[in-house]
Length: 223
Image (cartoon, rainbow, N blue to C red; front, top):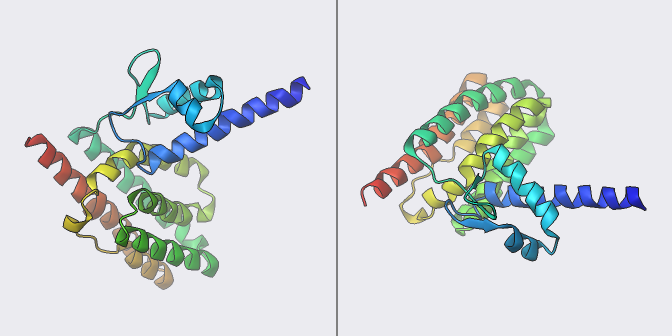
């Protein structure tokens, strides 16, 4: 019985961590918003212990920061932090794409096409949290082709820091100009063109969220 209880406790901790992690990465939790242990426990119908453990892990991941003994929050984004994240994403993701290309088969290419279509539909319907989640799913699907576990862990750490800010930066879709760099990446994969693939990934990051994020930070600083 004791072993069963311990397994259930570990399962609850992992479930709460994964749920909160996905919420943060998809932008469901806004920067600066306070998160309380009891608030999360009530919303997920769990005890305080797995929530406390999950919040500790997310602080260690850099996704959250402590405010006081009972509350944490998503950190605010700064211009210097944003530039560092974008530069790190470009460096790591172009490398990940290059390494993954030889392992991408027809089945995975079809999956990438499906994810891109779902992403475009989510953007068109202004379902921003789903669009952000699908965007990361597209990148993950590409890079994990060669089992890049360590690199994916590093990238997901960056995505965690960026997700909430992406939700803010892309809130006004009517004023956002988006080129489908994912379509360019898919074509490069079909052509087995590693240079074009790396260029598409870099442009997707730099000209997409990079451009929108810098504009948002500039507009915010002006007020």
